[in-house]
Length: 261
Image 1 (tube, rainbow, N blue to C red):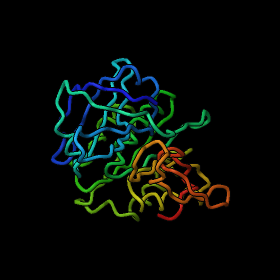
Image 2: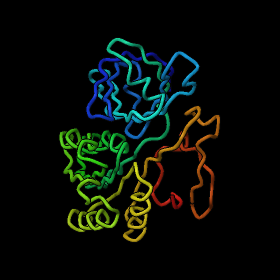
Image 3: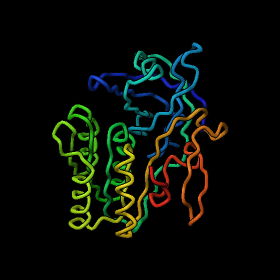
């Protein structure tokens, strides 16, 4: 991990609620992995004081670029949304443990919702480059919020999109879709991010079907490096309940370890 100044290449609106920011940071891009995040300094003033954790959306090593896809929600992301081309962004990272892939896996199923879609995009890119087929079920409030679908398809994934406005994104409907994909595509591993309900559902299927899985956890973070213990959550590791820091022991955990959310 490094503390560095990245240069904003672009910071554009991609929907009424989301922006896509690309950063030139060639000195760190080779260290970045799918599932990791950066702690971004949002302002030089005292408010907002704390950095904001931001998962990596895209890694373009050849160009030395790191991309973020983020929802404008609070004061921190509003400050980030005001950055322009050429501005310097104070970045700390990459942080945490990312996704891991097994050499014997041939096909993966990804289930994600909302802001979790951005976290899963580089996983698909990584899997495709290793010759692993990926299938993605993406869920959001509206069609306009499913912003990663095209990029995931470009990376080689077969993508299905579900939305609240179409009334096809409820957990039971997603469960049936997950089970159909598992049966028809011989899925070797499950991955998820962005929804507590979907995580609980996918964990149940993982245990029932004996299919390994990983989840990228989301949590409020103070320091991003494990010193403040702000993001501690309980996990079931080997039958023992242990308290782990999402930022440093995670943010990616084994699906079977996650307690009921």
